[in-house]
Image (cartoon, rainbow, N blue to C red):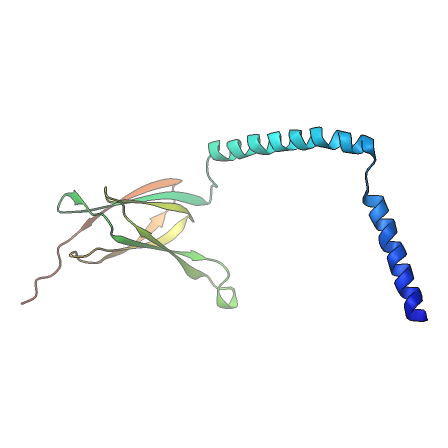
Length: 152
């Protein structure tokens, strides 16, 4: 019997909260125009996001890989950079795996500024790896691969 009373009180409370959330016809007529204004504002905010400069703590990185004065297509490019939140709140390395296109370039998404490791692996060429200090908002890294060592 107590359980039935609690269920009844719960359903009454739910009905009241549902009734409070309902809007009057006047409010529903006003909401469509305000939602259209909000969507217009959202679209203009999105276009502003594209137009404004990137975050001051990140860098736009472009990597161009050549060998024997020719672009190297389909080379694997690995970009490693430290990010917070590792084990015991220490920094850990996050990695991006990319491929170069036919003109030998790879466009890297925005990465945090600081020390980064770039490694390039291409068939028929010596593997490349080097640490870079990045402190600008945009950087193009030119990488020239060397022929592999001669094995007898």
